[in-house]
Length: 111
Length: 111
Image 1 (cartoon, each protein chain N blue to C red):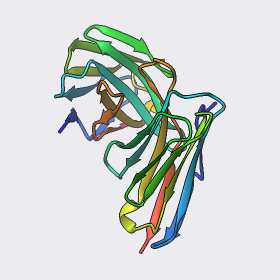
Image 2: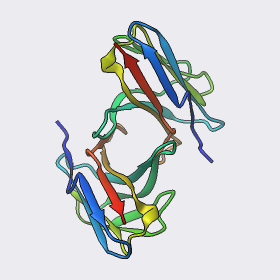
Image 3: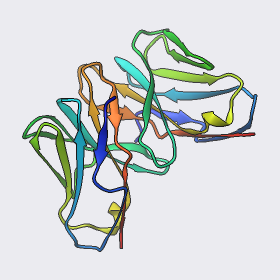
């Protein structure tokens, strides 16, 4: 059973379109992170959100942590081919050292 | 920049062989992790270590063991490789702010 469910699993869009990726759980997380992984590389951290309702922006990427700290979303505005990659959410529970990763969303942005 | 290196990018082994995957980090991080990544399943934690000679089982430790003799090095061992251990293996180290830094991964094929 996956603690963190990501949707959609695959997303293929045209350059310039907007998109939203969701990360949902029935568990409460003390913090939630989003990573992006490109082919042949390990995941790279994009952002960490820690407060319920928090919104963080990273250029065209907007990250939101749900009020109850059980879910998160990633919104990309005017997607570009360089945004192509596997997007992973990961949650930390309490003082645990380890993260729980979602199953990932494979995004392809076509020129 | 934090650097996490893994000994091999690609590895092909035969069923029953003993396999060693090495990981080295250069930022003096205490916490290190081994994951396997399979399509549709995200990253699953195999083992982690929070100090030299200290280790804890993750979600899927069966068939694996680890060794942490020095702070910078964390090894994953497959005592007797099986075909269901064919996967991408990712090593990570974690900084005090809970950001995980990943190596490029080792794609292991067991024939």
